[in-house]
Amino acid sequence: MSKVLFLHGLGSKPGGTKPKYLEKHGFSVFNPHLPKSSWKESIEAAQKIIDDEEPDVIVGSSRGGAVAMTVNIHNSKLVLIAPAWKRFQVVPSISKNTIVLHSPYDDVVMFKDSNQLKEQCNATLISCGKTHRMNDDEALDALLDAVKWSTKS
Image (cartoon, rainbow, N blue to C red):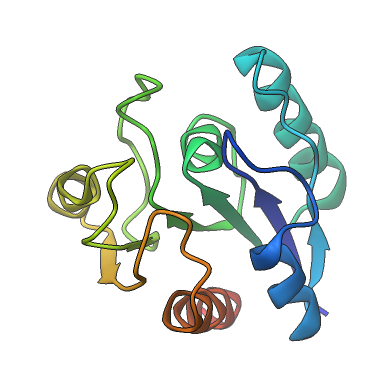
């Protein structure tokens, strides 16, 4: 069973729709609490699971995407969902294997920020979903496809 580390966004908490969806489809999902009051503690919580569990894929949603771009991912693949890297002043250095999922209708994190990741880092950008929450059927299916693809490559 492939292991996924799911890093939630600022207004979310562990046990949300997206990690449950991945669990329902057979993935072992680690979904730690990332304290919104502490960027440092969020980084430390994510890094500890990466170091201890060696997940196959790290999925970061919004603020969790910025966290995922900050930690040492070792050999894990990255799937970023509307990553809020600009808001948290993260330097965009991700591998070209990275898949970015983003809704062009997002009014929280600008779609152009993910387009910039595509251009600068040669990441794969997939336009999907209806809102920033990315919890509609199209977005969830795209997330599942991205995680499955990432575990095969």
